[in-house]
Length: 456
Ligand SMILES: *Cc1c(COP(=O)(O)O)cnc(C)c1O
Ligand SMILES: [Zn+2]
Image (cartoon, rainbow, N blue to C red; front, side):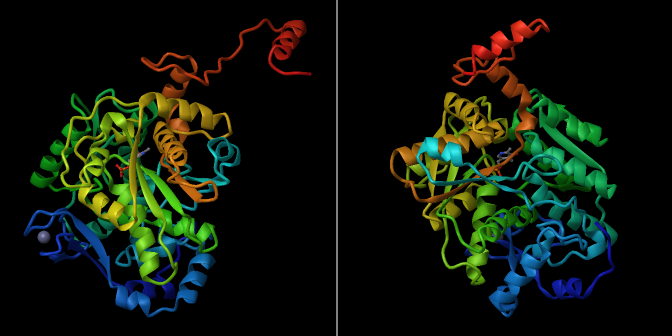
């Protein structure tokens, strides 16, 4: 992409305003987006980014639609990025020269026709958020966060590095965006709980990679302490700048359906930032009059790490953190999710459902989906397995338009796939195990091998 000076549209963008606001309705304290603050200083509650909706509403809806459609996947910096193409609604406070972008978003919607038919749906789509620079949806939030960091550093704020705890994908995204910007990063990873690809990503970007003898929740506690006591900026999704980027998933889905809203959106949930973000995107488009209905949202959890599901079952009367057990869906192996309050609010607003999937259900769903041409990560397997349950019990109907959020690229989890296809995952029978055939390089042997499997 070509970098241009701040153009007229960039200047318009700077006219809009956004700030951090405490989610506690009795507090609602406000902070500048350039303040180094992750929780409310008065009541310690989570913050969220609020936009000056009055100003945004002044522009007619047809103009917004034309503006966004005109920018979609074009090359004029920074609008080729589907996050910055909506900058007025995402983060209007960053100037062009501080934007750190890898052309994120604009990921394809895969029409899962065969899988949909097998499950009993006519209109199933998979939003391929893993078709991204670092292979997961985390890029969408990280471009906003690292751009704000660059802006803060350029205005004299003392930030020496950016840090995060991660189940593998956040650290990969943070490392890449910091490498693009030339800012040091420190990543906290639970030892032996991320895939080889995820581990090698921050390493190859030359960032300090700490492999700690604990789980994600342990890394999370430690990184918060390190950031609080040093000039290091926290990049976890408790930092609501990331939510602003991730909510563009919903903007894109609406745009890709020609400004129509699907009936259901299913999101795998761990720390529960993304399900909140997807809700926030639809809500904002609705508040601006760009869409006239809201979808129902489903949060899909792994049975091994399901605190939101348990809370949902009790009508959200309580929320109890738990110790997450090992799951193949390692990026959602979280027992003490930071964003649970936002997630509960989202599920309630969107007439939502929380459902879970076992290890066997998620693994075999990946096997089955991949046989129809998808290439799913285990988390997408969780979402698809949950979908099948909801269709089975009639919550989702045959004609409903359903979008499943695929959170990462299946190629980041080849260790899982190769074990699955070798039928070597403990406690799971691989129903779709396919093995390569070892043969001599001879015509007759090859023909025999083909005839055993394919009618000719
Ligand atoms: C981060 C992540 C999730 C979970 O998102 P949360 O915001 O933590 O709920 C799901 N899948 C993948 C692949 C991820 O990297
Ligand atoms: Zn507060």
